[in-house]
Structures are given as C-alpha cells and as structure tokens.
Amino acid sequence: MQNNIFRAKHGVFSSPSNNMEVVRVEQIEERDKEWSAEWRTRGCDSVSREVFEAVVVCTGHQSVLQLPAVAGIEKWPGYQIHSHNYRVPEPFKDQIVVVIAYAASGSEISREIATEAKQVHIATRVPNVQVKKLENHDNIWLHMMIDHVCEGGKVVFQDGSFVYADTILYCTG
Image (cartoon, rainbow, N blue to C red):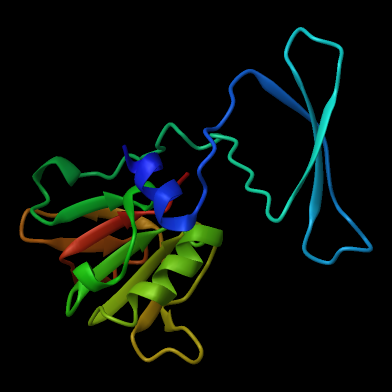
C-alpha cells in the first residue's frame, strides 16, 4: 500500500520486478542525468538493458533492527524509536532526545531533530569522549555510551553524567 502511494505521488508507475540480478549500472557520460542499467532474470543467460533518469539501490541490508542492551530499559518510561521508523523531526518538538550511535544515520538524524527538540544528546562508543556541545549547534551534546536508564526517565552515561530524556532514538542499524 505505501509503495503504491509513493509511486503514484512521485510518478513511478511500473511495478518492481523480483528475481532480477543487476549486472551493471553506470551513468551515461554524454547524457548528464541518465543511467544505463543491465540485468538478467535469475536462472537465465540473456541480459536486458534500459536507460533510466534515476537509480534507487534498495538492498534490504538493514531490514532486521539492531537494538543494544540497555540496563533498566524495561522500566524506563520514555518513548523509544529506531531510526528505521524515523521520518520527520516535528514529533520531537521541545523534547530532550538521546540518540544512540553517531555513525551516518545518527549524525544526520541528530542534526535534523535538533531543529525541533529542546536538547539532543548523542551517546557514542568513541573511546574517551568528553561531554561537549557539538560545534555550530547550541542544543546538541556528545556523550559516552549509555550506562543505564532509570524509572524516572534518567539516562546515565558511562562517565556518570546524565539527562532526563523524553525519547531514546536508536540509530544502531
């Protein structure tokens, strides 16, 4: 259903094909915004080729959510969400949000959420990180990883610093 809505909204009307093996995708040099794609149906030798205006790579690599063990999380009263389910920053308006992980999605989502949230605290596994505000951001702090959480909403980091958070957002793959 969501795929059909997306395709209609963005003018993508053909249905995706299954059991296809992509052989090659490359940008056509003489045509700035076109891509040549070659593929074959699994089990067949013949290769098909077509030119497209855009290419979307959807591997499904992170289709199983990775959630770290957080001591006390079963009694923590706040809202929890995984980056897989994140869409827009507005639901985090005026909240204190703890983002677990600081790789690509964690970094990008933290900055986006900071436009709405009261505070964003990033918990990272980077060794020996000192609690600090991120440069050019008044409401984003970098912390060591979470040590544990408490029933009252308290999130305690490995260095002993803590915040009372409304939301924990997992950007953990």
